Length: 247
Ligand code: ADP
Ligand code: MG
Image (cartoon, rainbow, N blue to C red):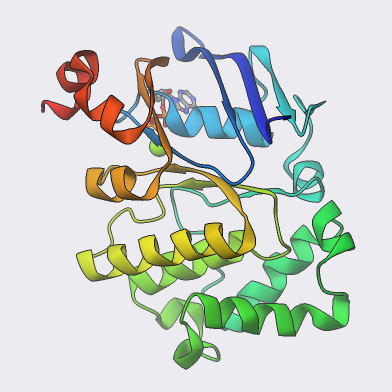
C-alpha cells in the first residue's frame, strides 16, 4: 500500500540554526498521526517544508507516491493536501459561511473535489455541510471576527476540510481553547476521520487530546524524531518521558 504522505530525511536550516534535522516518517490512508515535542523543536517548520511554505535544505516529500518537494502550496492544494496554521487565518469581516466558501474556492481543482466534490454552484451546499459537521449552524451568518477564539479555531479547522482533501495538516488546532471546546474539536476530528476517511497529522500540546485521538504519535526533540509509535508505546518510552512528558 502506498503511503498518503512520505517524508524522507527533511532538513531545514535558518542561518546557524538547524530547525529540522533529518526527519523521516510516513502516514497511511485514514490514519491520524499526532506530532508532539517541546516549543521550538521544529514541528511548524516541518509542516512548512511539507506544504511548500518553505523549501527544505535537503530531503524529499511524496504525496501518494509522487514527489512534491518544492511545489507551491496552491499546487499541493490541488493534489488534495491542505492545512491550518498555528495562528488563525480566518477573514474576520466575512461570515462563517463566506469563509468556508472562500476556502473551498482555494481548494477547488483538487483531484478529490473534481471527482467527488461540489461544482462551483455547489460550494454553498458544501459549506453548509461543513457548518453542520462542525456544529456551527447558529453562527453561519455571523462575521467570523465576532466569534469566540475557540469558535474561530473550529472554523479554521472546518476551512481546511473544504474541498474534500486527502490529507490535512493541523498546527495546534486546539491551542488556547477551553476544555469544553477541546473535547468538541476532538470529537469532530474523530468523526471527520471516520466518516470521510480523511487522513491527518495534528500538532497539539494537550496530551490527553493527542493520546486519545491519534493512531500513532511522533515525538520530536531538537529537530529530530525522538520516538514514533502507538500512543501507549510513546507514553511509556523513557527517552520521551525524560525529554518531554517529564516536565
Ligand atoms: P515548533 O513549531 O516546534 O515550536 P518551530 O518550527 O516554530 O518550532 O521552530 C523551530 C526553530 O526554528 C526555532 O528555533 C525557531 O526559532 C526557528 N525558526 C522557525 N522559523 C524560522 C524562520 N523563519 N527564521 C529563522 N528561524 C526560524
Ligand atoms: Mg509551532
